[in-house]
Image (tube, rainbow over all chains, first blue to last red; front, side, top):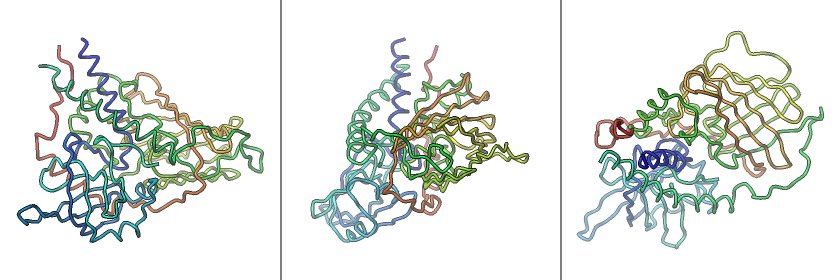
Length: 139
Length: 264
């Protein structure tokens, strides 16, 4: 019986912990228990709603390159974050060496939902949910 | 173990929640609704009514997530479990469909209220939701059609704008968490400008198709004079529609619904 109570609490927490991704169920597509961090060159920024997509080219120790597709907050959420990122500022980072932390796609491969970008000048950009379950609001 | 799955969900969620809450608090402190809103009388329009006009954002989530607290019938709860077993992939918002009431207030984007003599206009950035609420005493139109945002009729009760909303379709969720409803839903909203920068919000939601009693949702909005309504075209880059179809082919992604229910 105790476990039933825990289960009910879990449903409540599940609900509570998935408040404000702007557009779709995070957990359907990404695994919040599988964080990943990559470093590479930011090749492109697809600045469109309902999600920005970033392509980052990552080279491994053997010199082999892989292109990662990273989903991020929509422009309308990102520009309202306290860091003050705008489209123009983000686009100037194309070509920069970036480190990105995110959550792996359930589809596998080199796809993830980004959580935070760290640019070569040390500046940071929170680009996705914090806990893998929808994350905090951007307001 | 019958409940192994639920226990693992508990652990994952406690961890995720612990990570989420400080961030929410931090952000609200940094940019969100000020903890202590300025006190004082609300501004008034030419007719002496409290004026709701301005650019607003939700000061917090107005509910719609805690399905355990929602007075769903057992049948409706089973449907929720079905949705959850599919990781809420069926959320209509994921298809970029217009978000309904009260969820549209919950979006992390501002909305503008324009109070006119005989109507109050809501312009939501999110999903370009527009509502024109007559307050001149007229009733609902004779030819109402099921709508995402329903059909609204407003009236003033002192400083409170009361909006009756009927004629919803069944194609929205009331929040995350598979909070589905039927086209029998009716909502009475109450918006009260409680001060120079605040509106209190209450929605009483009835739906004999899924609820055992009315569900009351309360929230608040804070004035955001420096915001502007930006364009939000959700359908332009919605790759999820394609990706979700691919995910549905991977059975390991989804949870067996029978494992989401305690067994006898």
